[in-house]
Image (tube, rainbow, N blue to C red; front, side, top):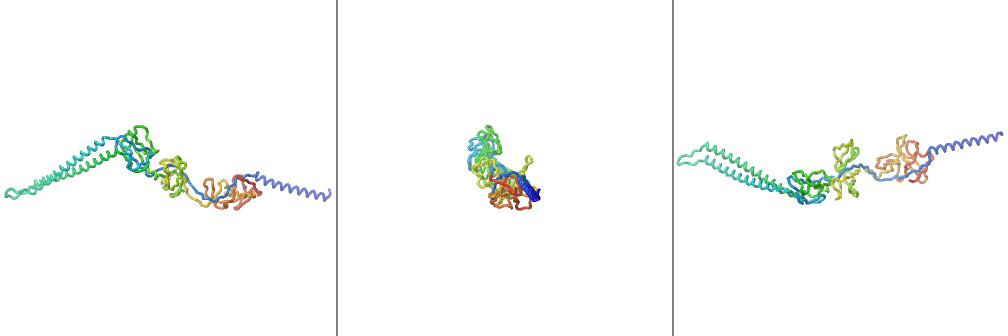
Length: 411
């Protein structure tokens, strides 16, 4: 083979090797990145990020007055029903007990007797005083000088002392009789039961025909209506303007809860009601149940809805911290670098299709959003899903997709 021709053949062979090598590199890089990926995009936004904790519980009133007659008898003339609004002094019901009238009569008779005994005791004292005076100042008989009988004086003094003790005892009997009469009259008057305060009837255990045993009631008919309270009183009147939410907060979340923090409270029974409120108090001790420890947190409501009732189920969301002007991205956009243990996101250029891997510093995570403390600016586009480069570095930006870039689309 001629020398010149042989050199041309060698040059083409070298060129073929180079082409094959380049093709191999391109294929290798394409293969390492996998097939082209389609990403969902999201925009870096600036917003106020609220950190919250939540708990469930019930509505509670701080002003609830139990009405429980201390006398025995039978309920009649029940004038209210559950949920009624009453004013102080309104009739609730009456109690039938004729024995109370007899008790008043007996008490009055006892007082009359005590007064008569006191009158007699006073007369005895006066008589004893006169006797003592005569003993101390005897009358003269004829022209003889009167002689004081010391023995008679001593006896007269003892009689006077005894009479005074009797008068004191009689006065005490009057006081006791007056107290007994007052109690008997109060008991008789208590047969008319009126509202001691204004408010709403939230418990009603009293029923017509029901026997009252004094400080407790026993039903002789159908079960009494109530508003879900465990109170055994005949009637309970609540001031609904003092209604607040009491919720249970897990001990892990409690460390971030402070008095004065704002809260939003919803009630299961009233889906259209969202009450604003403030943390008012935190229980000093917790409640352990099935290995879970919770604490009762009371939340005062700014303007309680008139339809709210005690024991209604509620859910409170307490804002424990607010991050104004926070940069946020979907948490799904934040990726972990297994080599550096750092966090990064993929930032896409919607015009060129280029993808850049950007290291970020993250803050709080709220729901599905993550706060970005550094690395991004508002308005940038971040990518969610797909695959990412395993290329590592010390910070800043890095090209993704094995150096060739990856196509992405809108989700």
